[in-house]
Length: 297
Image (tube, rainbow, N blue to C red; front, side, top):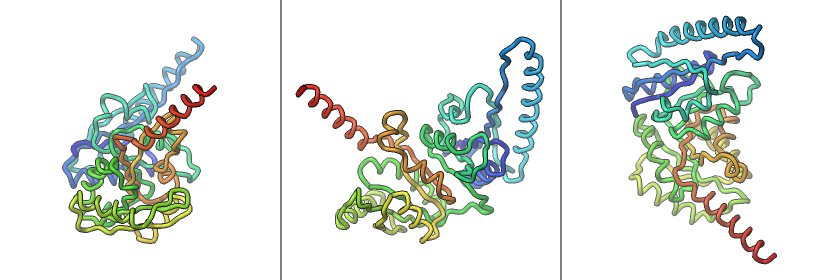
């Protein structure tokens, strides 16, 4: 892990994220890419051109001054920081830009559902979580000494989870953290305890885990089960997979990760799954059902 991307709108929550990113960067000797999206006005009428030009010029100047000041923050001492001001895209679009899409980690601040209105609050944070190829660490509160002692990894522990876990294990090894392997059982997605235990045992064996515990937790909904478990165990970090679905796929499956980012105050580390087998299977079944209906008509 060499490069960490930190979007900022100069808010307190963005600073919380920067401090967390700096703590990680110090530990792994990574550089930070600090990015600010500056929204510029475009004139619709010729008589407003001069006004908009002056406004944009002053706005860019102020943004640059704030960004320079931020790079001088004490938490960044000893870290290589590259700063960027972007004017031609939205904050969530930057994760697909050539300059930023190959980073190893994205750390972003979020207000969640607190009612504030900032550059990358709410849906924009969710879009970054959904679209980014790199792991996304969402920070909501200030953590003076960023330290991870207990990680909750909530999963179904099927084959597609194995690749995602490699990145989560990196954090666990980095901080010598205990890992709670968590399977949530709901009335809608019932699974026998024996089967769940076997899946978790095989998973732990695959990665030669030693400092871990296996947990099977009953709840009405997966999201509520994860949140309740994390607060009961006083966990430091929730790690979860996201399919990175957009469009039709996102509508079918929703996004558990985005719900957690909105509703939990603990840091959330989301890892994009490389093979969304569940969705592919559902889509194939959907197409098959449609073909059967069409042939029978």
